[in-house]
Length: 84
Image 1 (cartoon, rainbow, N blue to C red):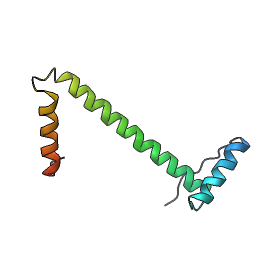
Image 2 (image 1 turned 120 degrees about the horizontal axis):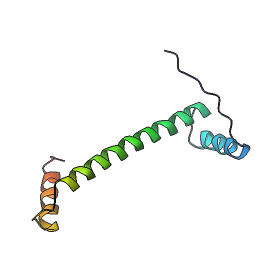
Image 3 (image 1 turned 45 degrees about the vertical axis):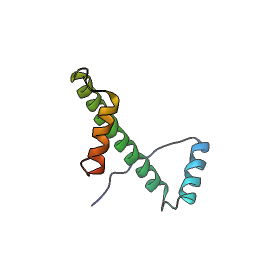
């Protein structure tokens, strides 16, 4: 399977930083480091979209008649029983 390639021009300071990260974190190449950054950015974007969706659901559900303690107790019970 071939992978697309990109030519990226960065300032010397960034190039040195990438070289340091590759060496310090044992990446096999600058490309592997950049791929890792892109993957992390993609996961962060997915998490952000999920969180926004969950917040919208929470706002749409209205105001609860339960106290925070009751809500936290329910979450804790679900967590302890492996339901979260």
